[in-house]
Image (cartoon, rainbow, N blue to C red; front, side, top):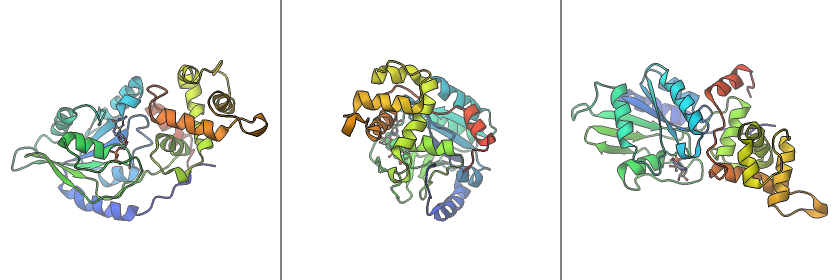
Length: 288
Ligand code: GDP
């Protein structure tokens, strides 16, 4: 089993981005700082490869600081690329963002040649939140549901700085199974596309060796280290969910709890991949 996910309408988005890209100076791709590799869209990279790229690792408040630093270094080592991390909902990101764009396209700026930035990213990564924070108003719609389609927006951040919102919806593209699980755990894909127990087990598979202490503390478990994914899920169920008939543990409820707690940062600041791990998943050929 893996994640069943069939994005629709990508041809329309592809056309819209291909058309818009001609007048763009910097392509800003928002990524989820907890899973930067998996939340990137390879189609975007292909359509925009000639343009300077700004990678914005958003939701840094939920991500592991040390791992975010690894990802920033990873992207900053690429030609024609800058990376910054931020928390689109609470900080004032305009300064860092404008500075990064100016470094990427130093010839742009000024009233006759405004900086034109295209804001892209998969649903739920925080694009609307960023635009709202930047403009100081509710210019763009935000929501928890992945994939609310909206018309393209043009936002004048300053007289010489224009943001364009993604034309169309840039669905995630799942290339390796691990990315599918990480996207599901983060809330980036619809809940009908995956089985919560399976996703929770995959999540625990990563958390047990990497964030075992956080699991132990949150669910008051006796042991986590050396336990199987199934054993930990069962232990969470016994601690946190009413038993089913004949004393059976409610694994479905435990799965929902673990996924919820990860999504909302209740387990602490956690990232699900490093650049090295992400590269290894591809190299190992865990392709779908
Ligand atoms: P969009 O689909 O890319 O426009 O994503 P939204 O802006 O609608 O954000 C999706 C969800 O993520 C919303 O519930 C936001 O409140 C939340 N969100 C956005 N940015 C951040 C952030 O930096 N940190 C945290 N913790 N949540 C965020």
